[in-house]
Image 1 (cartoon, rainbow, N blue to C red):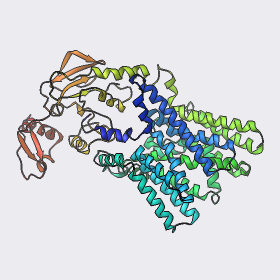
Image 2 (image 1 turned 90 degrees about the horizontal axis):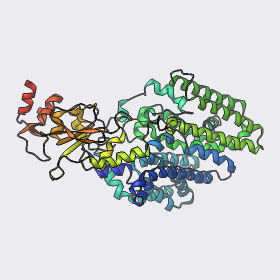
Image 3 (image 1 turned 30 degrees about the horizontal axis):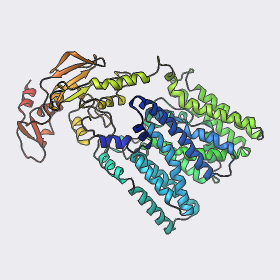
Image 4 (image 1 turned 180 degrees about the vertical axis):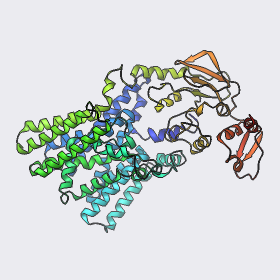
Length: 574
């Protein structure tokens, strides 16, 4: 399934634990895309239902109407705008996290552990990556609870929590354990924390204030931002009333500080590169605080409004800078909606009995989050300008994989194939390199986050341009020797792709507008090298010498002295 990738690693990372994909087993192949789209809507609906249920448990006496804008604000923000279109299973934590926090509090207050155990099981079964983040979020809540209740030394409660967590952890172990073993042996593990960054680039900090009320098309370091204006008001209100909302405020302060340093994002991203995906967890306290805020509109003072306005001006200036000082920026509606929301809050404070104002405020919040979610996808409603593919095009591509066949299908011998990017330059590499999984070609390339670390190490030593933990092999730099050594017999290429020397065009074979090129020099899957080269001699070689050495030699670790590659010598002389 691609060099360095296998089914367990790939699908345990993405879909084996995603219960919302299981329904595809009951859907015909022709309706898989419909089911996929439907599952996105179901996830969003359940995320809102999860928040609404938990919010009513945490704030049971709040006015019914205040839950509506908070729920809209929870479901739709910058994270959703990106994840729903790119990685729908990233929406699952929005369903799970509120339930995890609620069940944890239920255990701590009522000593009933069953539901917490079940939610822990679901959290770990769903995806170990997000489970790690949500575990840290639950830890913060638990410490906040201990701080608030002064129950630091309630050992019986601690033991009950430990037992429930342990059982919940053991139940999904049949999937969790092999997944963890796989990721620890993958190219993603063992990387330098936060890629060695101490601080983010300057543009990141300039964009942070703007990210409060808007979101950018491609989130830098996964800071998706894009909170509703009412959510921003709620956070400011909490900070201005520090003692009354001390627990909320410590969470907000920790979040703000964490966004400033790459190491924080690296730790929450599994001690790897800096990614602020963890920001989805802050939605829960932010929108719970919104409900509190809407209950206390009468207490707002001129200073509160002054701070609302100051933050709005700073965010607007940030968006102005990040849009290259353009007055025609697409961020303008976000700034306008912020100002309108501020005006409505002021009106509702002075006319609290007007139901029309409440309805208008809810409508503005809905418009606000719609703009946040849709801002990056304004072109997608027009097939002529959309950077997405139509369902018809996707179906054509999927069915087209059947036409990619090994050169000699009657010959049972194993050979590998390279299929060039089937979307050309339309969307970059993207997961389009996963399409050949549906064919029977033994394609060498795949775009997955969890691939074998040893293959990645080899590509780095050979200085393969484009090799990354996401796409280990890439196109192997179209290198002739390496392609042949790895057994690539057939290449399906786009017209603009460089062709390695030994691959000759097969004019009679063209699939999906790609031409087949074949090599008579490709190696079989198993062969006997002529020479053995010591690892200590191989290490200092140049990338070219290393590649040439692989043509007739095997590198042996622990060997004091070995032979020399005849082909490498010939290459160096040339």
